[in-house]
Length: 145
Ligand code: HEC
Image (cartoon, rainbow, N blue to C red; front, side):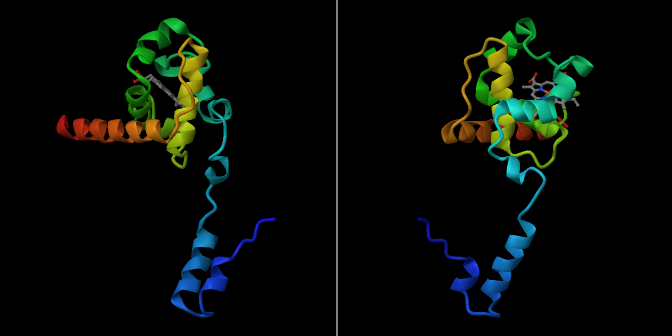
C-alpha cells in the first residue's frame, strides 16, 4: 500500500505554502501533460503523421530509407535537436507547442527505426545530449541572423 501525503497537509492552513500548493495543483493540467508517457508511435500518429506520412513540403517520408539514411547518420542527438528547434518547413516541436522533449525524441527515434535506424527511445543521458545540441543550435541560429 502506498501512503500519499497531500502537500496541503504539510502546510499550516492559510499559510503561503498551502496556497502555492493549491495553485500548483490547479495549474498543472496541460493538453499534453498526460501524454508524457506516450510511445513514439502514438506521438507520431497524433502529431508527426500529418506531414511525414505523405511528405508535405518535402518532409522525409515515414519509412523512406533513402530520405532517412543521411539524416540518421547525423546522429540521434543532433537530428532530434535540429528537428525540435525547427528546420525550414519543419515547425519547432512539430507544431505542438506543449509537446515535451522526451515525447518528441521518442517519435523521432520511432521514425528513424522504421527507416532502418537502430535508435532506441532516449534515456536521461541521451536527453541531456539532445538539450546540449539544442543550445548549440539556438546559439548558431542567433549568430547567423
Ligand atoms: C507541419 C508539418 C510537419 C509536422 C507536423 C512535423 N514535421 Fe518533421 N518535418 C517537416 C518538414 C517539411 C521537414 C523537412 C525540413 C527540411 O529539411 O526542409 C521535416 C523534417 C523533420 C526531421 C529531419 C530534420 C532535419 O534536420 O533534416 C525530423 C527528425 C522530423 N521532421 C521529426 C518530426 C517529428 C518527430 C514530428 C512530430 C513530433 C514532426 N517532425 C512533425 C514537416 C513536419
